[in-house]
Length: 384
Image (tube, rainbow, N blue to C red; front, side, top):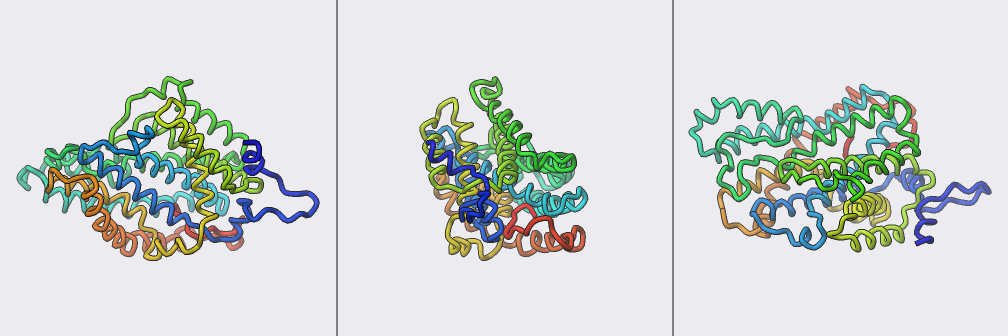
């Protein structure tokens, strides 16, 4: 354990000794990473997990660990987001460009996905006459509020009302306003100069993590289901985001050690289904995604050669899976996953090529980088 701790944090040598190749700062200069692969994996975890929830089936991993794979995937997203958003702010520490880049990443693809859901999926699967569906104010409220990131607990009239998981149209979207709030927090901390203060970030992350342990009554808050997260899960995601920001602030002394990964993962496994599993899981997943991103082979990037499809998978998977459940009431979880994944992948590919990539290209016009960035650019940033 002591060896693992020594491998996690170290300071730059004062005698000119060459720093370790596993040091995070050196890996950032190297410009190569597998964040796109990790995001694809995280989105796939969410899709796989929802294949059980939306068929009213018990998820084996959840029974074993107390975590759903969907929770693991979302925590992975927030760990990466906290790190990369802090990186983005440090490169261009100005509020307007930061907000523009965040909006371009989240809103265009979301608005298109919500529009497809309202005007294609809804009419196909509503049990109401189309005249009733389109004159119901709920339809238009859902379209407007969900396109503007008010995405939790959204329903469309008569849509999926007889499914095993009834009424939920796109339950995955509840995390997006949480992520937007984390962006706002990062911008606020960056504006007042605290985003680079590792002590402040460490204190904030410790406080948030303690809220999901038995030391806090929040740890027993009821779950929010597939369409809305529990308070515990929201706090977990906030803690994970801050931990990612903390990792970036400690980049000069943070070593990406596989030994630490093994120790943290072992600790997480030992606490599965126990009272401390949320805390150990956040720490283990948060550190592991960084090590995986920078210390895994380059050939893995072949998996993401078509583009960064993770966001498209995330916003389209749920309605695709609910559509399958509506058409095939006794579909098994594995059959749902086998059918939904390629369909969702195709929609995500179209979203990337037709919506997301063109929207992100507008950064050059609306939020151009400074002539001399504060730090080297990081290739493959998800939340550009």
